[in-house]
Length: 408
Image (tube, rainbow, N blue to C red; front, side, top):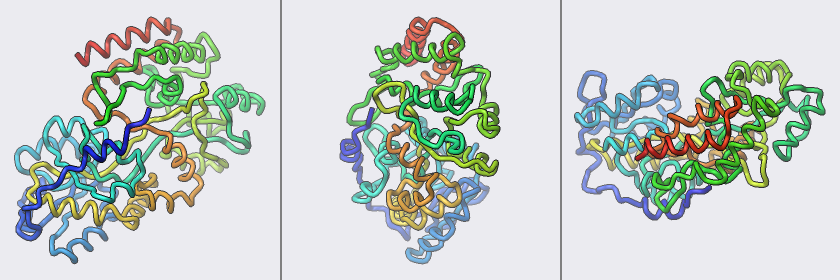
């Protein structure tokens, strides 16, 4: 499943109102107790990335005479604080965030469109897809994150060509547990989604504006085929998938060398390298002839719908944060693949980053539509039940019915 990028961009070319002058606009409250000065852009940033953005903020201020105030925030609080403060006329002009906030931010009316212009073509397609909601671009992307398979190259020198080949290669290396992926008592559909897509069973279909909440495809024939396959890999089958294996157990199995393949994200690579393991990053081996496409999560920046500085905010995002230099500074701060193609290419000189980038090219944006909340509510539990021996088709059909009823 692919989102039609060209259609999204065409629909998303919403012009920013140009009557707002740069020098005469007043910013909103910083949210930290006092009114910001005139001609100030207030930007909420993950506290760990303030330093990475300071150079761009200073450069913008020097060139345009508009002060950029970076406010470090706890990442766990940014979204809720933004939603609460913007309608009151407070909050920042710009906030950092994740693309899957878009449905909630849009529903609450707290974000404004961004005009990327010709620069839209400079970004990874999945980053633009994820930054687009109902045909309009609302986010300046800076990072793309997805899972992939980490392989212990000392145990298995060559990448697997398929799911079955992965298991066979691990067994040939003398391992009883060749492959690990975290699940837990309530399942983990995020990590299983690549296998589901390999059966042609996305959660939602798409149209020219992105994901279509009226087109629930969870219950397609492919979904039931995936459920049947999942059962064959569970408690009453091969036992590869196990709800007793949480994130910590999966990690330890890989670090101990009892597993050669680990389906996880870039956030876990450091622990493997620190343990002295030689690793490579592989695509998710598919159980079918189709590609196994994981979810992509994209991080970026949003403009407040109540900002009095929309022109300045758009200019700062597109022409300063959307540069290779700044995107690489953000990459250094978080070690996550840049969204800007040129920066992604530079970062991919690291073979680990290159591996995740290759898998990311096969990824699909995690749906940001509000209806996705109804899916998460039931999805993992149904998959855990199937792994533990429940009838796969009946359980999947009930999952689909529960989600459809919740969406309404």
